[in-house]
Image 1 (cartoon, helix red, strand yellow):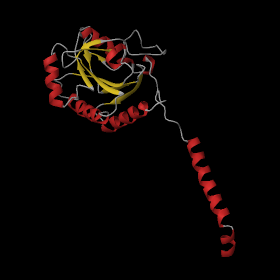
Image 2 (tube, one colour; image 1 turned 120 degrees about the vertical axis):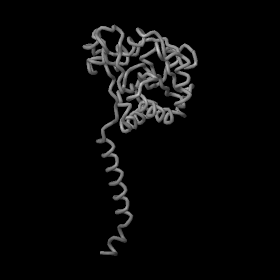
Image 3 (tube, one colour; image 1 turned 90 degrees about the vertical axis):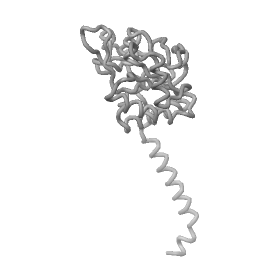
Image 4 (cartoon, one colour; image 1 turned 45 degrees about the vertical axis):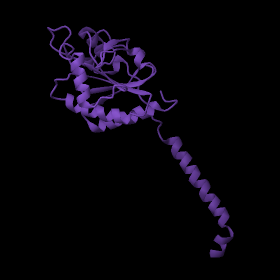
Length: 224
């Protein structure tokens, strides 16, 4: 028997290699290909969406915008053109979920530090309190990299509109206050075509880890 195996050892080695390659190819073919959903307003909890859009299922993109960042610079959609970015809503005096969200967004900032394709955009929901100097102090305190992360303020109606009509991520506040908003823990992933590709719990480290993985996947050429 030993002589038999010695005589045909090259054949057996070749068969083993062919089998290994075939199994690997078969596994790769069966393994589900990663995808990320492209969200429309109809896919999201109606509480987060403006009533005029709640049943819309067509292609949805982030609208044009114009806000002012922590350095007093006007930031528009042009500053994010062709970029993947993470958006959220917060206010500097928030003592509940905001500190956790900001801490986790700092981790996102670290993860994208060397990725020129990715940025961050945080909107205050209390522009009457969060002036440019307040945002600047907050940015310095939290270690915000101005080249990657804009903290923006502006007209409350505009912030309300983009929160409810574009990012689909903010609840209504008091009914008697037309532009009252209750921000949520959502981090919103936006692709280079201005489409919403995911919602993540900004207070949960596992969800933020998944966000970073999805950012890296979107960053790869051919993934959209």
